[in-house]
Amino acid sequence: MSDNAVRTIGIPRSLLFYEYGVLWQRFFEELGFQVVVSPPTDRAIFERGEAASVDEVCLASKTFMGHVAALAEGDQCDALFVPSFDNSDIRVGFCTKYQALPDLVRATFPQMRPQLVTMRVQKASDKKRMRADYLELARRLGANPRQASRAYKRALHAQEASDAARAKAQQETLALLAKYRKVVASDRTGTEQPPLAILLVAHPYIAHDPYIAGDIVAAIERLGATVLFADEADRTPALKRSFEFSETLPWMINRHLAGAVLQLHEQVDGIVLLSAFPCGPDSMFDDAIMRNVQGVPILNLMIDAQSGSAGTETRLESFIDILRFQGKGSYLHD
Image (cartoon, rainbow, N blue to C red; front, side, top):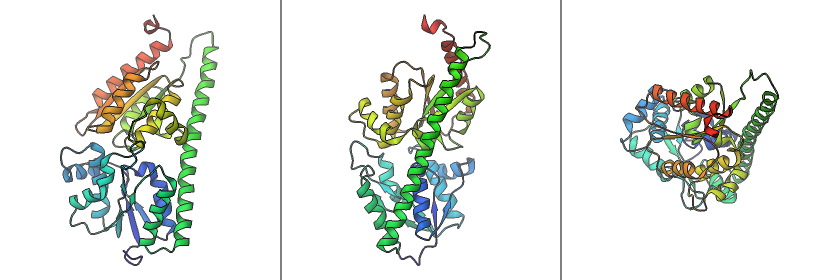
């Protein structure tokens, strides 16, 4: 592909966009391309993806295909960026759907007008190898070595700054909650209840997608609890802590979540595990969390395309009620 063939690159707002979206946008912009990101997920986008997908794929994959369709059919871009993340690192790899994603898109939309811009990230945990993968992509897009190196350096810095800002905001929220708890504990009138903090443990493409998890986050907040996101925990220490949880857990995103649970479970009142049916990695990961993390109540929620909100909200209300009883020293401590 020459640099003359592409002017505008579209990025689906789904899956690993929530991990690397800042890097991707900045990288292409630094190379001189216009970038179009698909709009936040809504019912129309999801239903388009569901119609284009086979029944057996997970909810998140169907949503991704809807975002591809939204960009391709809207004639908004010359090319779509769909990378392949390899599973070659058996301790910090990715679900196989990420490896096959470019082929899945080609097979699902064989007549798609925009070109497909893709790359193979062989080992995302190896910074040098990942840098080389991006520089190779830049070369194929017409950039010279100096342009490519500068674009990747700036893009990586932007992603790291974004990640650091989210981790800092999380720590500030935890500090405020701890301070408020002390104030409430010193109030002898007993008129105020201590604040509740809920750790939402979910893949970022689930936790931060307004269509998939927005109602759940909003429901928790309506019930008076503060939501903390496990994926916003500082990545480096979280990945290190994850090996205390499991030496053999093969998925990088689940490792990040596991380390965050170990870091934060003593600072929150409850944990909500949220998965999209039928996620293979989460079916194992969530069960392991339920079995091995002690000392904090855990609610396990599974959502799919047919899930209604009423049953989920009822379960959340019951969970929050239990946490409030526990905070008052009720029968749960007897």
